[in-house]
Image (cartoon, rainbow, N blue to C red):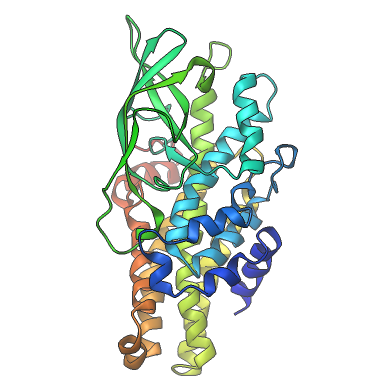
Amino acid sequence: MRSLDVARAVCERYHPGLLKELEQIPYTEREKPGSPIIDLFRIHGGVGLLIPEKFGGHGAAPLDALHTQLALGSLSPSLVAAVSMHHFTVAMLYSLAVAKGRLTDAQNDLLRRVVPDQLVMASGWAEGRTEQNILTPSVTARPVEGGYLLSGAKKPCSLSHSMSLLTASIAIHGLEGDPELALALVPADSPGLTVRPFWGNELLAGAESDEVLLEDVFVPKDMVVRAGADDPRRLDDLQTAGFVWFEMLITAGYLGGAAALVEQVQERERGSVQERAALGVELEASVALLEGVARAIGPEPGDEASVARVLVARYAVQNALPRITSHSLELLGGLDFIRSSGHALEAAASTALAFHPPGRGAAAEPLLRYFDGGPLVLA
């Protein structure tokens, strides 16, 4: 199918051989706990997709990143659910790194190691929204000599078992005043950091979305990114930009699973010509909508219009996914359903898009106000 062929070609350019290796693993093996998919992602240079070339990465454009996610999603929803967290974190951190003076020397040195050492970043950021700094974190930071002691938990936290680094939004509590919001870079092997079971669903189990617990984890002062008096909106703008990246990438990943089902319908010539064409039209409309978002993303995507645009695309695709997947399964037929659970599981996994914040209900009034000319404020 044309859209998937284009996506696979882009993915192969950035990660040669990855798709072929994933295909050789049975679907249920790819998606179960302990799956090798994240290791394969790392082996094939996956961590550097959005990292700028000056830091050793590919510096992929948004459209290429979207196509790469679409291709990977056609084979493993667990993989795209996990690596979307890495990619949007990378997009945020390296936007600071390329701006002179935004990060400490130690932070820059760490980011220069990510590609050579293939370090995977898990996200302990709170979910993003406009008109607000990083949301009240679940991790607090107590100042001590030379740094901070972090305590709290992030659950679920994708990549919890494979991560090299946890990037966590934190609340720094001082002697007086409101807590200051900041970002901590925490090595996965830090004393006091543990991983506990949390994810109980067989779907997306390969994403390693368990609980990361921090109990008095020491983080040096130069491994904490603070807004600073000279740029108080730094983390606010950073998170909004990351939110746009995340919504686009995660939506593309789940759409890739639906595209794989449609491709099977087309290749097997299931149903009538009219049915197959209608199915293809609905899928291609969703792909084109996301491609429009990717083309519109500029070097600084953290503006209100970008947030609104990506949310409209995400909810439109979310509406289309159940129709695309259920119709695909129906056309593939009962024998396909009986002989293997792979296609049914792939269809079911796509429903997880509805569970990523912000939920459709929570965004309804803010979007209506924005459509009417007001500001977009997600609560």
